[in-house]
Length: 219
Image (cartoon, rainbow, N blue to C red):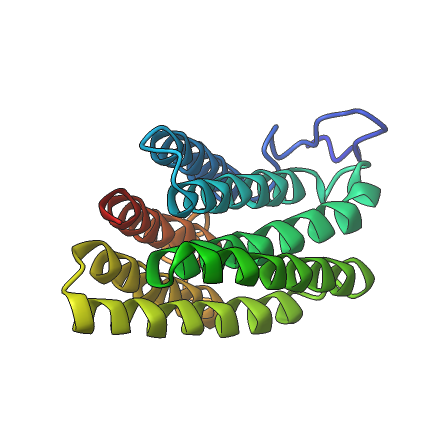
C-alpha cells in the first residue's frame, strides 16, 4: 500500500475533500442555500430590515465557505492558510449576527432610532472583528454569537407577543433551531464515520436558515 505523503500542491491520498468530505460538502451546501436566501430577501424591497437580513445571509455563506476550505486543506501542505481562514470564519459568523441585530432594530423601532443604533451595531462589529483577528479561538465566537442571538430571540419573542408578527415568530424559532444545532455540534455526537457532529450541525442549521428566510420575508 502506497503511503506517500502529499507534496506541495498534491491532493492527499484520502481524496480531494480531505478526511472529512461530508463536512466540506455540507458546508458548501449551507453556503449555497444562504446565498440563495439572501438574494431572494434582498430582492423583496429596499427596506433596511430586508437589506440587513440579506447581508446576514451573505456573511453566513462567507463563513461556511471559509469553513469548508479549512476542512478541505487542514491536512495538506496548504495548512498554513488555516489561521487566516479561521479568522475569516469567526468574523463572518459573528458579524452575520450583528447584521441580524440591525435588522431587528429596524423591525421593532422607528427608522430614526434604528438609524442611530445602526452605528452602534457597526462599532460593535468592528470591535468584535478586531477581537477575533487577535484571538480566533472558536469559544470567543460562540460567546459573542450566543449573546447577540439571545438578544434577537428576546426582541423577536416580544414582537410576536405584542403584535402577533408571524415573521418574528419564525425568526425566533430559527434561533432556537440554531441553538439546538450548536448543542449537537458541541456534544461531538456522530451518526457515522463520515457524518459527524459538524455535518449534523450543518443539516440542522439549514432548517434554521429556512426559518430565518421565511420570517424575514414576512417582516
